[in-house]
Structures are given as C-alpha cells and as structure tokens.
Amino acid sequence: MQPLEQRGYRERVVSVHRLHDLQEEIETRHREGLLEETFFRKWLTGFVFSPPESLPEARSLIVVAVPDTQIRFTFTWNGKRIPLIVPPTYLHWQRTDQRAEDALVEILEPAGYRVTRAVLPKKLLAVRSGLAAYGKNNVTYVPGLGSFHRLVAFYSDLPPQQDDWREPKMMERCEKCVACLRHCPTGAITSERFLLRAERCITFHNEQPSDVPFPAWLDASWHNCLVGCFHCQSICPENRDFLDWVEEGAEFSSEETILLVEGVPLDQLPAEAIRKLEQSDLVGLLDSLPRNLKLLLEGPERETLTESD
Ligand code: B12
Ligand code: SF4
Ligand code: SF4
Image (cartoon, rainbow, N blue to C red; front, side):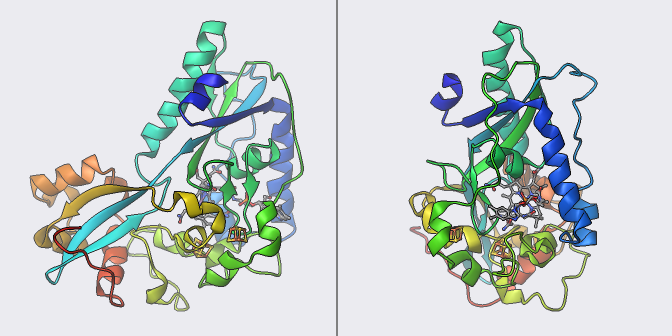
C-alpha cells in the first residue's frame, strides 16, 4: 500500500483465518507452563481472537509498523538538570494508532472496504506475516526502522491478495550476537530458551502503580527510563542508526519535580505542570511516576545537562 510507505509506515495483510494460529500459539505456550501465571493473567488474557460485531465479515488482518521515537524529558533535582528517557511506543500512542487507522481508511474506504482495530498478539502477527523478525530480546525489528516502531493491528473486509505466513523468525544478526542477553541486568533474556521471562523484565514491574512494591531482587541501579527499560534495545547493533532519534520533551522545574516525586494528584498540581503533563501525554503514567522518578533521581550519579545542552 504505497500511501502507507510514503508516510514511512510498513504493513502486511494476511487472511483472517490466521487468527486460529495466533490463538493456538499463545495457548500452547501457556499449556506448556512457559508463561508465568501472574504475567499471563495480567497481560495475555485480553486478546480477542475473533472479528468484532462491527465487522463480522472480516476477511483479513492488517498489521502496521509506525515509526516511533524516544522522548527525553528534563527534571530538576538538587539544582541539577537530569535528562530521563521514555522509550518508543509509550507516549502519544492513541495518536499513533489513530494515524495508522486514518491512513488505512484513506486507502481502503474509497474502494468500499472497512477497517477496525484488533486486540491481538501483535509481534507474533508481525513476524508470522513477514513484516518483522524477532530479536533475541523478543522485541520485533522491521527493516529500515529497527525496533523503533509501534505495532497496530486491524481487521478488514479487504480480501487478502497474498497470504504469506511463516514460522516465527529470528533476525539473522542474532545468530552471532549476545549483546542484549549480556546487557539485560535481570536475566529476563536467557540462553536457556528464546521466550522472554517476562516476569523478570524491568518493564513488567515499573509500569505498575507506585504503591506496588518492586521485588527484592530488582536492584534500583538497573532502572534506566522514566518507565520501561531500554537496555536491550540501546545495545543492539541493529538499532545503531536509530539511537540518535530522540525527541526533546518538556522540562520540569525543581518545584514541579518535587511535586511529581511526592505523587501529588493531577488536579492539585499547578496549572503549568498540568499543561506540560497533558501535552507530553504523561498523565496516563502519573501512577507509576513517583516511584520511578524517585529511584532514578536519588539513584547512582546520573548524566546531567548544562545550560547549553
Ligand atoms: C505483554 C506485553 C509486554 C510484557 C511482556 C513482554 C513479552 N515479550 O511478552 C512486558 C510488560 C514485560 C512488556 C515489555 C515490553 N514491551 Co510490551 N507488550 C506486551 C503485549 C501487550 C503482548 C505481547 C505478547 O503477546 N507476549 C506474549 C508472548 C508469548 O509473545 P511474544 O513476546 O511475541 O513471544 C513469542 C516469541 O518468544 C516466539 N518464540 C518462542 N520461542 C521461539 C524460538 C525462536 C527461534 C523464535 C524465532 C521465536 C520464538 O513465540 C512467542 C509467541 O508464542 C504487546 C501488545 C500486543 N497487543 O501485542 C506489547 C508490545 C509487545 N510491547 C512493546 C514494547 C515496546 C515493549 C518494551 C520494549 C517496552 C520498553 N521499552 O520497556 C518492553 C520489551 C520487553 C522485551 N524484551 O520483550 C511493543 C513492541 C514493539 C516492538 N518493536 O517489538 C508492543 C507490540 C506494543 C505495541 N503496540 O507496539 N510488554
Ligand atoms: S543485541 Fe544482538 S542478539 Fe540481541 S536482538 Fe540485537 S542483534 Fe539480536
Ligand atoms: S527491557 Fe530491560 S529488563 Fe526487559 S528484557 Fe530488555 S533489558 Fe531486560
């Protein structure tokens, strides 16, 4: 679909019959005991492996990779300006998903076809359809985008022209590389199996609200992002060309930073802080922000910015 490519997006279309394979694969991993139960219940029971009532005659699944960037925010703590990263896919995701949908509608609607969002295991769909390959870190990589993309899935009544469907594929580069495995501090990526030990992933823990305590084994110095973790993507040679792709986010004053660390509710923050949080799409992360920020600001000596940065 050329108009998608022109926007820098990539996509694949497969038959809706592939839903069965997606469901079967997740269920099999669960049956085999490879998915820790708390993780499975929290994250993997919400997939819907059938077309929605609004599009029961769906004939295809469409998966789109939308380029996405890191965003660097600056906080002021003890007189120092401290930059902290939010990795790709977290912020403005509603806008990103809507853009992908709008682009598809623009192409398909004139031809009489409809699209609607799908809640599916998107990496599996992207890899099996040939859009992406898995890295050893279990993140997907798309040629020309590295892992700097957000995946969005759709149902459509568009008849699939092709129906390429392959076994899950790992990137060739991973065959001779263990950088992410070595760099992951928690052992979530292991040589014993390909599947991530998701319950060991920092992201699994620091996306939780601040009142959920971290497990004792999770060393405070391992945190590296305002939310999520970027270790296994930043070390990856496949991402070398994209690492400088960082958008500059808002800067928070000393007073604002203290209020965020203290977890002051949104409606009690000064108007300027609310405006920054809303514009930055950080409101949805307010729950986890106090604990994560405190850890990062009070943790080991961090990079600081000078006035000219
Ligand atoms: C649950 C979830 C999580 C969980 C678990 C992560 C995981 N790896 O499963 C947690 C909270 C830990 C998490 C973390 C992150 N997530 Co997340 N997450 C999801 C979610 C909701 C579902 C993923 C899923 O289906 N997991 C289930 C497992 C079973 O599937 P899988 O990971 O595809 O694993 C397959 C392979 O291991 C393969 N496999 C098994 N053995 C073998 C052997 C070989 C040789 C091969 C090739 C394959 C293979 O089979 C498995 C499927 O059966 C998706 C959104 C969505 N709706 O899909 C986002 C999503 C996957 N997350 C995303 C992101 C960005 C992240 C983070 C990078 C965020 C961050 N910066 O901190 C981290 C990355 C952690 C990591 N190293 O994987 C993006 C991924 C984009 C991309 N480029 O990959 C997604 C798609 C959201 C989006 N819309 O873009 N996430
Ligand atoms: S760091 Fe190496 S092994 Fe890990 S995903 Fe990247 S290329 Fe593959
Ligand atoms: S996101 Fe962090 S904790 Fe999770 S697998 Fe990658 S390096 Fe390990």
